Length: 133
Image 1 (spheres, helix red, strand yellow):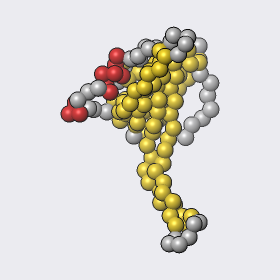
Image 2 (cartoon, rainbow, N blue to C red; image 1 turned 90 degrees about the horizontal axis):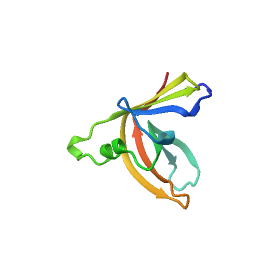
Image 3 (tube, helix red, strand yellow; image 1 turned 120 degrees about the vertical axis):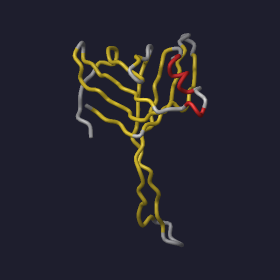
């Protein structure tokens, strides 16, 4: 799926539907395959697995808060629409790779502030797929 690459986080950009999200500190994601263990009746050993579809689960950490991500999170149910999250990874001034999250939804927000006085919002998202170009 992915080839190794080197990128600089401090010059890379995260966009939602083409709009740059200011203050992004980090983004992380994992690809999850729904899977269920299969057992014989009366046995404690797994005899197989039932494998289902893939989906993407991710986190975007933002210094303080993001008005755009808050808007997406707090929309009325009837107004919810998927968005595209795009990470443009850079090395100095050269683009390295685009990472696209298709059909993404912002699902959750947590906020913390520590003794250093820097507030961090963590936005959770899910997506149908991730593509690297």
